[in-house]
Image 1: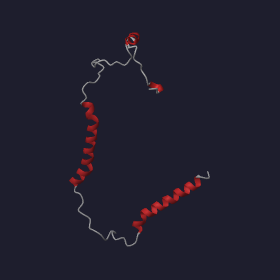
Image 2: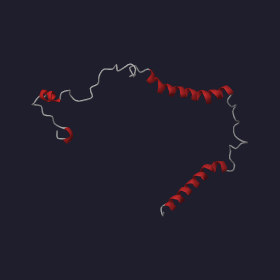
Image 3: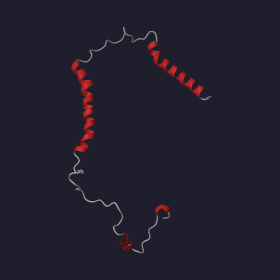
Image 4: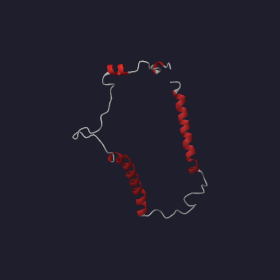
Length: 120
């Protein structure tokens, strides 16, 4: 509990200082760019330009991201379909079919070193 109070005070002081620093330019007297001074605002956007900017831009971005996600899956060639059966070449996941024959076929003079013990 003794560490919570200093942390709370530090957090509140940091927050208050941040708000004052951020609001400083708006509260300053003699602001040269007030509402009655400064450059005149420009013409604004027309309806077509606003629609193009605020609707067309996000739609183009949506189409680009969507196509980047969906197109690789659509152009992929061989896929497994349950009704068609398996058409790919077999994959060997296990060890040798006959371990006894594999041991007998190994050359007796070869010494395999290394492995988990780390003795090379």
